[in-house]
Image (cartoon, rainbow, N blue to C red):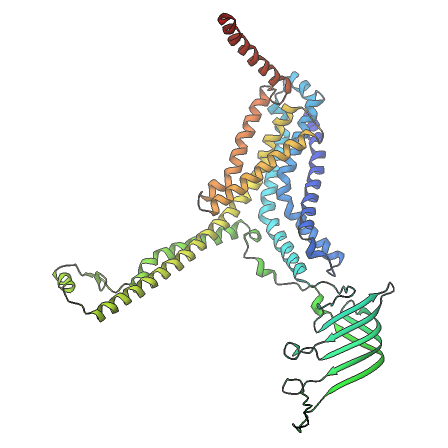
Length: 497
C-alpha cells in the first residue's frame, strides 16, 4: 500500500466511524420518541432495554451505511481539497480517479458486508427486536395510583386514595372488590380504611395491601348468582334471606398476584410471516409460491364459473352442441307470465352469484399478486441497499473534490440532501410497484439508477477540475450575459435615438 492510499484511508475512517455512530444513535432516538408511550409505566429492567436497543441498532445498520459512506467520503476528499493536498496530488500527475481507488475498494467491501448483513443478520434482528417490542407494548403498566382517581388496572379491584404521603402511606382508601360475576351483580365487597400502604414482595410477583382502622362491607350473592332482595311491605308477609355483612378491623392485609403485569414473551414464529423477517431464499420461495397460487387461481376461473350458467354449448367431453334450428324452436316456445317471472328470477339469481364469484376471486387473486410483489420487492432491496453504499461513494468522493470543503458544515448539508433523495425515490418506487404501475425490478432499482447517473456525472466533473459549486463562476456567467444584453440591445437603442 502506497503512502497516498494510507493518507486517504486515514482521512476516511475517522468520519466514517463517527458518522455511523451518530446515525445509529439518531435512529434509536427516533424509535424511542415514537414508542415512548409504550415504554413509560412499564416495569422493565435494564436487560430488556439493552436487548431492545441492541436489536434495533442492528436493524438500523443497513440504513446508516449508505449515509455514512456518503458523508465520510465527501468529508475525506473535501478536507484534501480544502488544505490543497488534492491539488498537490494532481500536480504530481495522479488523477482524481486514482486517488479514489482505495476508497472505491473500501466501498466495494462495505457493499458486500451490507449485502450479507441484510440477508443474514437483519432478518434475525427484526424478528427479535419487533417481537420484544410487541411484548413490551402489550405488557400492562405498573401499579401507579393517583390521588382522587379510581385505579382499575388491577384485576378484580377498583382503588381510590384521597392523599399519598412521601413515606408510601396512603390516607382515605376506598377499595371496591369484584368477584367473577361482578358484571352481573355489581360490586360485592367495599372496604373503607383511614390509612394504608401498598408494596410488592417476591420480586414483584405479589402485591400486598395493608389497611388500618377501617370497615369492610360484604354483600353476599346466593347460589343462583343474584343478590338477595328485601321486601319491606308488611302485606307481603315474606322477607327473603339476607347475607349482608359489616365488619370492622384495625389491621387488614390483602395479597394479590401481579402475574398479569409481567411481560410475557410470545412465540417468535408468529412474526416470521413478515417480509422483513426473511432472507433472500425464504423471500424467493414465498414469492414463487404466491405467484404459483395466482396462476392456478387464474386458470381455474373459467371451469369454476361454468356452474353459474344454465346453458352450455359443450355436451360431455368431446362432443360439441352447435346452435341450429333447435335454438329457433326453443325461442319460439310461448312463455306464460309465471314462467317468465321464474326465468327472470333464476337469471337474476345466477347473475348475482356470478358477480359475487367474480368479486371474491378478484380480491383473492389481487391479494396474492400484491403479496408476491411485496416479497419480491423486499428481495430486491437486499441488493439495492447494499449497492447504494457504492453509489453513495460515487457521489460523495467527487463532490468532495469539487466542493473542497471539509468538516461537518457543507458536507452534512449535501449528504442530507442526497440521502433524502434516495429515501424519497425508494419509497416512491415501492409505492408505484404496490399500486401495480411499475414492475418490481423497475421500481426497486429506480432510486439507485437515478443516483448512479448523478454519481457518474460528478466523477466526470471532478476529472475535468470543474468549478461546479463555486460562486464566482456563476457571477462571471451572469456578468457575461449582462454584457451581451447591453451590447446587443444598448446599440439598438442608440441607433433608434
